[in-house]
Amino acid sequence: MAKTRMVHQFGMGTSIRSRNYTEAAARAIRDALWHNSLNLADALGFPKTAMLIDVEIGVQKPEAVDSAALLRVFPYGQPSITVVKGGLDVDKPDGSGTTVIANAAVIVSFDMEPNHD
Figure (tube, rainbow, N blue to C red):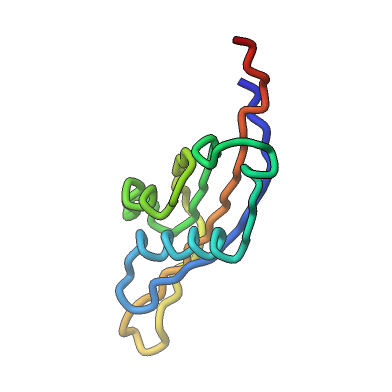
């Protein structure tokens, strides 16, 4: 397979009150995706299902992210999720909680190898 990177998209998401790492990560993915209107698959003559989507999420507590839930954010393509330590946890000044900030890098690739059937 000649997997070729075509697009990088970046986003940030937060969970201001509930300290929900999965929701902050989902918002970061949506931020990356929804601020771009790319018709890349159509432009290259591929079906949208052929999009190979690699996602890296950075949060302070990677173990608190439900990666399977994040897959449901994608309307098409073949997403894979990797969660790493990153992002920020920002304590509220009065000690009443923590705001979770997640960062997302979304990389869209296609298999550009010709089919020799």
